[in-house]
Amino acid sequence: MSSDCPDDAPPSRSFPPVAVQWRELAVLLALIVPPMVLGILARPPSGMFATLALATVVRDLALVALIRYFLWRNGEPRTQIGWHLERLGRELGWGLLLFAPLFFGSAALRGVLQSLGMRTAPLPTFFLPAERGPGAVLLALTLVAVVAVAEETLFRGYLLLRIEGLTGSPTAASASTPTGSG
Image (cartoon, rainbow, N blue to C red; front, side, top):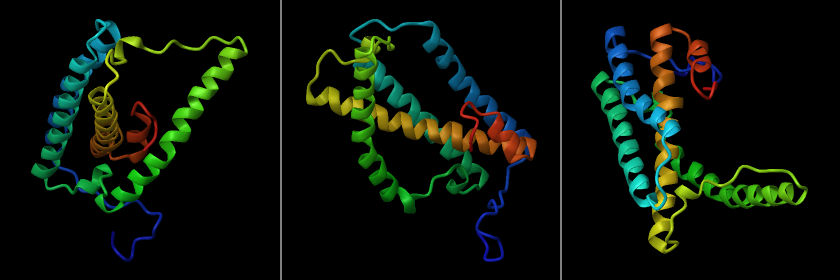
């Protein structure tokens, strides 16, 4: 950011040609929409946690690599999709610090609601590993970390960037994403 730009002003962005943006967007949507639809329609058989987790990790890492390649090919900095490595340690620290209270707090809230006679959504047992050894726990933690980074990169980073480039409007980009925020 230049010194004459106020702190609250958005950084200036440079975008590749519109045809390139449309091609990249079409490729990514072709790769992410069918698995999303199948995930909604199909229920995986029980005992498939390891297979599904590994497949998801590989798919999400491949999508992030593809996004990184698109940025590299277009000469766009990684910061345009929100990758600020200098803040990585601080953000990981906050995530680790907040994980336990939020995880156990949500479990406690679920218990309180059930004790009050309220119905809560059942936990999806088909994703819980049948084996609860250290390998399954490590795989589950890896899955959570990779999915979180991939979804933030894809939906809050790359798709927002491309929609803004195609519409010329950051507002249109943030209004058109699943989260509705930027």
